[in-house]
Length: 623
Image (cartoon, rainbow, N blue to C red; front, side, top):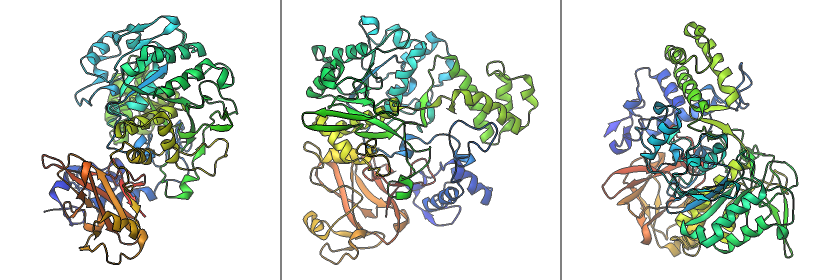
């Protein structure tokens, strides 16, 4: 048994391998107190958690972006937290599902086979090394398999089908918007070290290019895209179960009179969920296809790029409303409020078009900024001097001090809304809708029998109510990917029908029906018929791991010891247990051992409450 080099407590050897990559703020804090410590020395999860909590207490309550010159273009709350939170940090998802086997169609002005759309993450891919030359980059990317199942070009009424089409590999400006929506939904995090990975990171994609060469997209062209899917059942040929529409129509019109809305209704009847951006007017004004009754219309929230937890009401009430469009759609005697659901719509990382001049400029600026953040001022100056002509800096940068280098970098980065070397921050319901479409793909992977109406119902039923926002604009609430997938698994056709959701308190009656013993977290087991103390501290936990050899529960309550508090295997690959926890907030994970005997610590995919752990992924939390 190895020991933590900081506190001396024992650390299980298998777990030690998972604790060698603490976050930058945690590394800095540890090295202030233990100067000789290096990440390769590892540490125990309790020490990492303690340092993460210490760092969290030093964050400003107010954003710091306006307290320096020049100010940054996005909010942040500690110098070491500079950047944007990843999707899974701001809105946790179910890590067991990636949209595998599901195809999402996109209607947009143009696309590009971005590296994040690859089948796998390639650690050897150096996208900047091939430059921004269109053909050289294309050749490099064609050597890698991607998840674009087919490409359709419907510009100006002409139809072209094929992934070798020049317009798919074009450096035209109108290629950027569709590239952004596809990567936000389904990117695998290739160019961000996994931080800005989409929820549907293994979903197939069917990009449909609509509009005019100028980039404008009249309503009739969006209609052409939907009609192409309907024609000859093209949606079925390519396995399309979800369509993302992040573009809007021309003028308000009742849905019954609008051909675009009628096409949405037709697709829905055939089994395809159409997810639509509400629009960004901030007014009671819906444009097709957002008012189609069957469409799942998505509005937005502004989380200020700030961490929050759904179990902390004060933090939930800090969530603001994005200026999305809204209204009502009438169907027979029912009025359907639109949007029906909200998702983050601002401070999201949008990929730069790899074949644009901006890509190489931000690559240089990003490398220099990262060096400066790591207190490597000489390296930053060397990078900027090598590329000073490209990034439009004078030779004086060679002798500038660190503060001058920082100022020079921000003056170049800010106009491009820089967030990391391959991305800029973006906003709009155009980027909120893909988050919902990606979650729907996860749900369909978990339960392929779900109809569009059932997908809508589960997504809205599982959303987090935001009662502090105006009733007519808040829909059912905020997207909760973890709960949506968990409920999808429990609908007819899912693998977990009738099972409780993991992370929830269980009553004595339900416990007797389950017929499994209660384990005291960190201690011996007790009979299911024995008194269990406070009912709210008796928690049902489970994980779907059909290929696992064993699953156990780990956390501070048992000193993070794997293979001690085992879960029981039920049929269909579900592992579950009932545990009585000590009072107070408890963090936990599952220790999952695969068929080859290799263990990994895994968060509870059905519990949306996560706490910073000191590592890239947070711990699951019970209150």
